[in-house]
Amino acid sequence: MDVVERFVQKYASTDYKSVAEDALAHQFNDLVVPLDPNGKPSECEELKEEVYHFVECNNELHDRLDECEVRCKLREQSVAALEQKEAGKEHIIASLKNSIQDRTNLCQILGKLETGASPISLSNRLEAVVAQYNLGNRDACALLCAWLPLQLCEKLQHPVGSHKGLSTGMISNWGNTADRMRELQQIMGGRDTRGTNALNCVHTSNFYRWK
Image 1 (cartoon, rainbow, N blue to C red):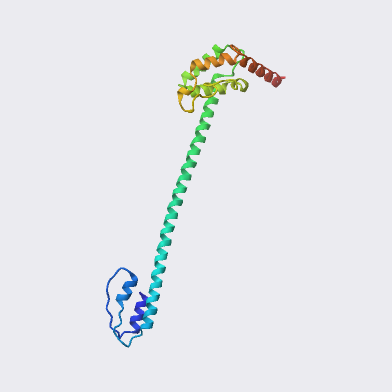
Image 2 (cartoon, rainbow, N blue to C red; image 1 turned 135 degrees about the horizontal axis):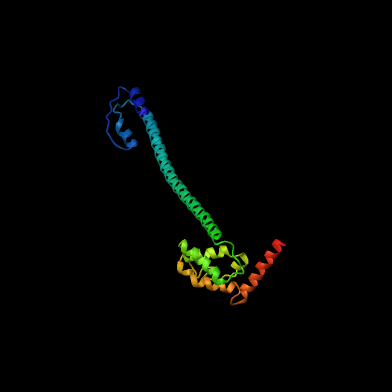
């Protein structure tokens, strides 16, 4: 209230009365009411206008402050959402790395797949590891795909080579022991030409690799 103090000091001979109100403009109007008829109303009006200007500026600053607070909250929410999303990606990547490492380790336990072995023998080796490590149908099918050479893996049909239905997470959408055994028999040339052609490709690629 520097403006009011300057006004009072200048017109010290003027009587005034004070009234406590919340609004700054009304407070000024009721705080200084010149009763001296010889006072200068023009200067008083200038002071009023100056106070009104300060009030408007104050209100505008409050509005801007509210807007800044809203924007800051929105930015904080956006940052939190991005951090959560990045954390989810890192978790997925870590899970995939662990899954790949686990399959690699299990394939090493299974040993090299011998294409000349019988489907029953290969199935027994596979299912022994599946039972030992308590793998579900999804992981068991994935292990079979990782164990087989690429030419044979591409011949696997659903629900072993891929899932049936819409969800990859449902165990019932993946092949069981009997399904995996049937696919091994078929791709190893036991029932149709899929396995015969794939095996020929495997033998041919191995021949040129070691030639």
